[in-house]
Length: 143
Image (cartoon, rainbow, N blue to C red; front, side, top):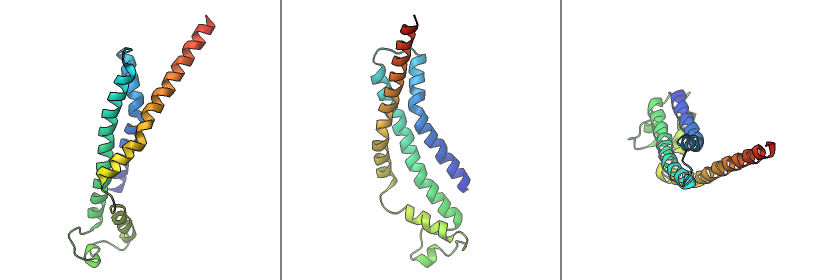
């Protein structure tokens, strides 16, 4: 179960990191030159915010799934009842999952993550712009 949740989390992370590049490739294939940056930024914000929301929701939901898989009782009144069905081998893992779910909720974590991630959109665009500009300069020098 833990392997499945990890695979889904890594897939969402890879999608989050590769989506700006895929958006640029899609814009190049469609030969969009006018308002390219604005189109890229709009699509990038929409697509990556959806992926970030999904990733934030999944991280919280996967922790709940793992806790219920290990036998954690969410409706218990005290600590002894909560950990009654958890085997001693998994007790430390369940306690760490329980602690990771404390604090701020997943929507606020998602907003903070997107605020930290959003400069990545601009960095990817700037790097590809500089690479293309450098390639054009080299092409004109060869001629």
